[in-house]
Length: 74
Image: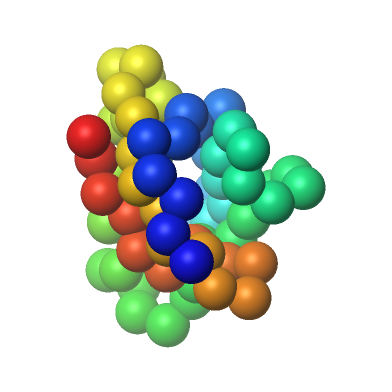
């Protein structure tokens, strides 16, 4: 399900195993994992969410089974 024009509250990542999470205001009940599958995909979404957080920009995120699988920077 798409959640549009949301604020990124926090991002977190670990150095192995495609481990990256974010808190998106109004989406879910806390930390949402960026869906693992392709290392580049996890890195790209993490970078997009970090950019939104550091520049006070909104994002659209697609969440399936409590994992972020797509994101768009507004």
